[in-house]
Image (tube, rainbow, N blue to C red; front, top):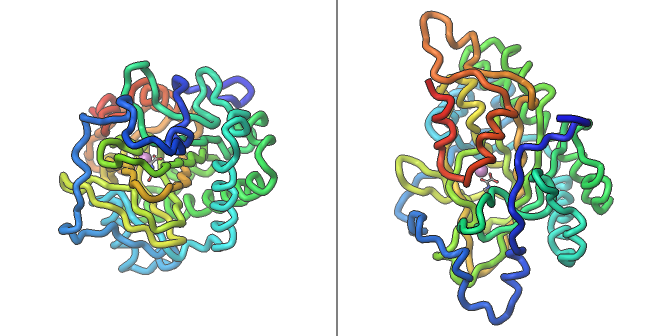
Length: 352
Ligand code: OGA
Ligand code: NI
């Protein structure tokens, strides 16, 4: 962690999927992208379930119904859509436009933001750990946005100005939202708010932008393999209504139907640990389609790298047993990044 740089493990370089998808003659996907190890991408139109919706303003104002809805969404789904969150739609539009422009730049320009050896930040792909691993139908751009001292000048300062300004404003807004959510969780769980705030007020925030190009054989590939997020909290923005995100609920994959300008929030492994398993980090994945590109801007918030955490002490009163070991964010991330993305299996390594 010298000079604020956080090296957690990197990814092997693989070709840009965006370039691959541009090839007019591409009728079939190359074998490295054909997945035989995934659940089929079946339509779930018969499943009427929808991810719960939480109104942030009502939640923060102490509305009892909304608190209950929020608490049960965190327990039973690990996912919810967040409306009335107070982030201005013009900022969301600017953020999305700048992101689209970034991916529209020629490959040579995007390569000026390379993922360096041992580091996931930059333009490229994540979690490619072996040459014979199957690949995902997506490219990404990943940057640390907060705390300020962790921003990498060689990435941040080179961004087109409109993108950089949007990202700066956006990351500040998302920090505010995350603190409101963490505070509400403490209230619902009757955890001393300071125990949560201490872990998240100076939190480690990264933004991962996923670019899913259209795919000629969407049923054969996966945009993002099933995984739970290692982090504390994840806040996803997608401005188009093109579906792609699927959440595992009672064994089925439920397709999220994003409301424009709402966020989709989910609990990560670290919050499952801190809440001693009361709130759950749920498996999810992203699928592709043959018609349109899809962009998701995904903000992750976690305790700082050298921060130690475990089940919140006030949850362990009255003889409640800790379900997880204590660890640090850096150790947890290193373990996750060292392996191919796969379900929730890493959380089991710290389960008691
Ligand atoms: C992620 C993620 C889903 C999506 O980036 O961790 O789950 O729809 N993304 O892009
Ligand atoms: Ni995820």
